[in-house]
Length: 384
Image (spheres, rainbow, N blue to C red):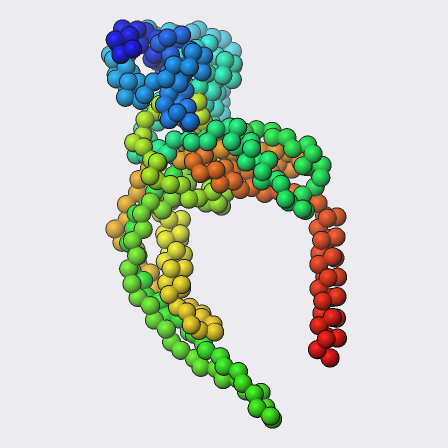
């Protein structure tokens, strides 16, 4: 197989389209992975953790792909220019979009400036948009998808089960408007936190005699001081991804992280960052400080109440790495409103908002308060 790859991969595996201007939009380079056996487009298989051709099922490891790609890059590709007529894009429109030509069918792909990998809308071949990474920092790591689209659909169905306030019509329709696997850009921050926190704490004691009930409250000043080290605190680098949604599907297990290779992107969408590391520092600092406060608070116990009075946290030794993490995004529409869901493409953790049946909601609380009132009446009767 290795001899075969060296002989034909340069012709079948790697094609280039050189950039040219079209109406103010740059026609950029695409990277597409071709099977040397049948010529079909190959993509990364999350189950095998290898590249696989969906047509002939031939499997390829990433080292073989890297070697073949390097050989193919040494060849000179032909340059094709097209003469077209028509109105041109405005400068504002062109500034928000990038256009690509599919290597397989020649179809033109237009997307926004942050899309780095997608599929051709005409032939569905997976493509990696190399030009989108030009001038950008190269990702240091990537966590490959371990769960596929079928897993995401099953997780969505499971997520709906047991939701007693969910409208029945939403459950019955149970349709998904869109589902896509996306590599989301994350900045991973390392830092050390030196903290000094003072708490006001109390201990309360109650007792009674034949004449009075007594309450004794003692007040304490509690100090905590120490140093914590943080590694790979994630902050998503895409404005299209809601921070709370991305943080809800954490944690990602970094033990599965691999050195970045574009082959992992094949068959999935990928966003490049539009929020750089410097602009993400504030969010990282906030997460680190909240975690520090939480850890220190867990060391203060044995009191009736604990209230922080002063907090002094200084961060040092900050470093940032760039990684792509796997996320399945699902969207559905109900009652004219869109609902978004996300699943961790590595662990399967699933989150999202759901509609609430108002009638069921009020019936639930009516039943709750009715039951609570009955219980209170019974207790009063027994104690009386």
